[in-house]
Each structure stands twice: as C-alpha cells, then as structure tokens.
Image (cartoon, rainbow, N blue to C red; front, side):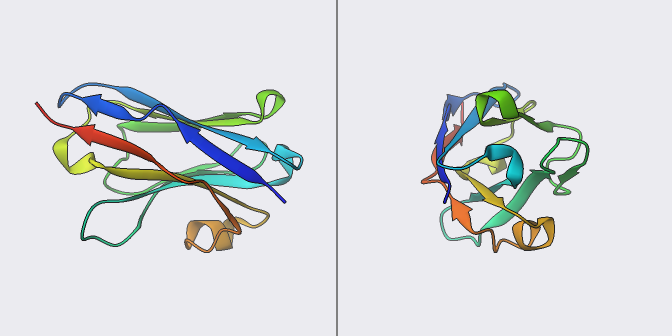
Length: 123
C-alpha cells in the first residue's frame, strides 16, 4: 500500500515555472514506477509524464515535451515535475500516480493516486 501526497501547485504567470512534488509513504517507493496526470475542468484526465522505478526511463505527453521534466529521489521517497514555459492551457489539477507496471501506469490505470494539486497559469 502506498500513499501519495502532492504539493507545490499554485498560480503562475504564462512563461513562468513551477515544480510540483509527490511524497510517497507506506511502501518502498523504488518498487514503483510513477507518473503525473492532469485534469482540467470539463476535460478528460490527460497523461503528462512518467518515470521508471530507477529513473532510467522517462516518458512525456506531446503537449509538454521540451517544457516539463520528471525526476525522482528514491532516498527521499519523492517524485518531481518541473514545469517551465507554462501556458494557460497547462491549467489543471495535477495528480501523481504509482504502479508496479509502466503499462498500467501510463494508461491511467495506476493502482495508487494522490489527491491532486491545483496549477493555474494566468496573468
């Protein structure tokens, strides 16, 4: 069993940067691949990024490639999403998720989910 808690969301101007974090507890964090998803009002949940358990492989959705960077620190049981050059269309609730298999995680069927953190990009 893994509990995930996101933090670091907030209001940022277009072109700005923000880093959101996901702290895991309850089980060994390095046992799991982890990822980030987002959901804007009235829209379906969207895959943002994922990283394998050891950090050697990363994946990004087309809309964030080149702007967002996923990372993790297993010693701190924490995953990160660095978001640069933010755009108004990045406004959403950002969720972290974890699963033992990347296939399930990337498809949005991760076993564990956090409660989400709001990111708003507006001038």
